Length: 320
Image 1 (tube, helix red, strand yellow):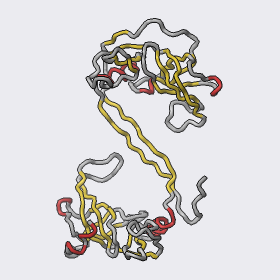
Image 2 (tube, helix red, strand yellow):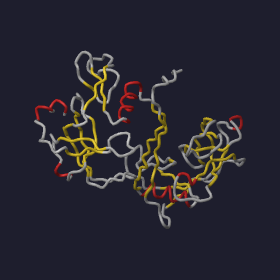
Image 3 (cartoon, rainbow, N blue to C red):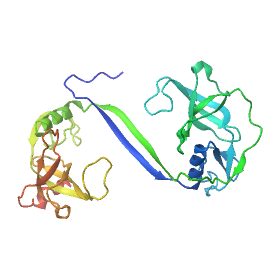
Image 4 (cartoon, rainbow, N blue to C red):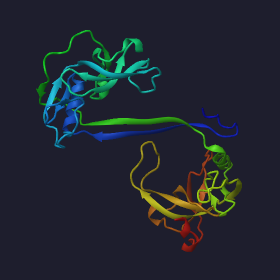
C-alpha cells in the first residue's frame, strides 16, 4: 500500500475530459437508430455468423458489412462480474453486474449492465432481456440495462433487415473522462508555490549544472537528485512555436494564436506558453518575451514581447 504524501506536498483533484465526436457509417447508423426504435440489429458475416454489436467490416474477410439481421431482445449471460461501487456516468447508480449477453439469434455477446439484487442472484447461463430506456436518442444507453427473464430461448432465428429507419442517427459524441488526484511531489510543489508568488524556480543538477524548469527532483541526464533551487527568468526567448488554428471547446481564446517553447533566462530547459500582444504572423524564433499575469492567476496567462532585440541563435540552439 502506498504511503500518503508528506503534509508539505500539494495535492489537487484533476479532471481530464475529451468529448469525442464521430460520424457513423451505414452499419453503426442502422444499429444505433434501431436501438432508438427498440430494434436490435446484428451483422451477418461471410461465414454466416450474426455479430452484435455489428462490426463495420467483416472480421474474416475485411469487406464492408452489407447484410443486417434483427435479433431478439432476450438472451443468455455468458459471463459476468459484480460492480459493487458504480462510478459516475455508469448505467445504474446502485450495485449491478457487468455481463456479456448473447442475444437470441446472435453468435457473439454484447457487454452491458445487468440489474440484479446481488451477486448471488447472477449466474452464467441465466436468461435476461433488454430493459429499454424511457427516452431513447439513438445510443447504446437506449438499452438501459438487462434484467432477469424467466422465458425460454427464442426459437425464431435472426430476420433479415434493411437497416433503414426514418430520421437516422448519423453521428455520436462519446464522452471520455478521467478523474484523479494529482500529487506533484516535493520538487514541483516548490515550483508551484513559487509561481503563486509570481516567481519561476528550477533545480540545478550538481553534476552537469543544468537548471531544469519545471524541476523534476532528479537530473534526467545524470540520474542524481537535485535540491539546489535557482530562480530563473522572468524574461525568456522563443525557441520554437506553432500557430493554432482550431478553437478548443471551452477555451476562450480566439484563433489563430501561437503556442511556443520559451527558454527562460538561466534555465536549461524550455517550457511552453502562449504568445500574445503581437500578431501571430510576427512571432519568430529568438523573440524576447516576458510573462503577463492575471490578477488572480497562479501562473502566467501568456507571454508578450519585451521590445528587446532578438536573441542570437547560438544562445538558444541547444534548447530547441
